[in-house]
Length: 267
Length: 121
Image 1 (cartoon, rainbow over the protein chains, first blue to last red):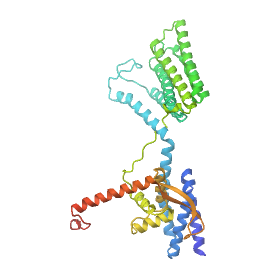
Image 2: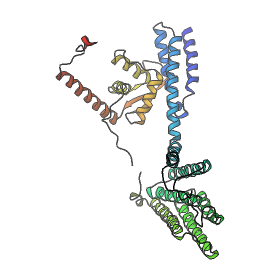
Image 3: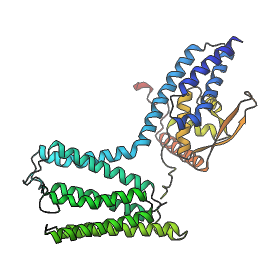
């Protein structure tokens, strides 16, 4: 019958349009939507009504749905990135506003009473904060309990602050002192260890103890060579690495024990 | 921690009509569409894009769920996905209807009828 051919043709076009939906949505509702469209076409042909206007109207209505579902899908897929981009922008807005309105916010790095960051410094800080945030998101996505998330958060925050402290004021002397590069060793141990461990709690615990040990070694070298490290700051960072290691270990114990997770789990 | 679902949140007109359509029996997409059209006396018409978008969000919210795939004897031999209300969906519908009853009761107390403001329009 001519109407069946017309319905078949419109259904094929409609099926092509449905390919524009995000894959999970398409896999779930693609076939039922095509069925419903066919049902509506049959209803119209049975009532001796034309199909062209109806099909165009339905294509437009479904097109609106496609835009909405793709936007929702994109936001859901990238909401962690969006969140950290917003956090980064919010943090960077503080020194920016202080510079624009000449607020007397003390900035130890600039050596002045007011903040005076250059574009490069903004870019470096932006990359650091965003990178740390995304690293934490990755670690948190592998976390099975609160202790695991907390351990990852402390490790990432300690790494971020160590870089920032060295860039802003310098852990040894001032920020221009090349001796500060020795702290790259600490960060390297932490990053390589976390990469190998892939933030799995037992392995990450060992990596964080190794990072704390590397930090101690750096301090000892700095003392022996007479570089004059800032011991209170070093003690703070070593405590942070050890705290992270202990929490990773607790997370490992909790996830290994079927009853042990009740205290720390957030699921 | 899993968030506790709230049944007292107001529903959108599309969601309310879909819940009403599913309140008596499970239906497939076309069946829901026709039921909504019938119950709203043709005032609410949904295309497939709106209908399945709403169904997806309602499933995510736990208001409805997919039931078995089966053939509708009144249609053709294609197997179709049927949708049915969940217990939470039933509670949400009851809460929404209670809200409507309260609003109507207030209007009746004030002796307001649909034609009460006709002169002012």
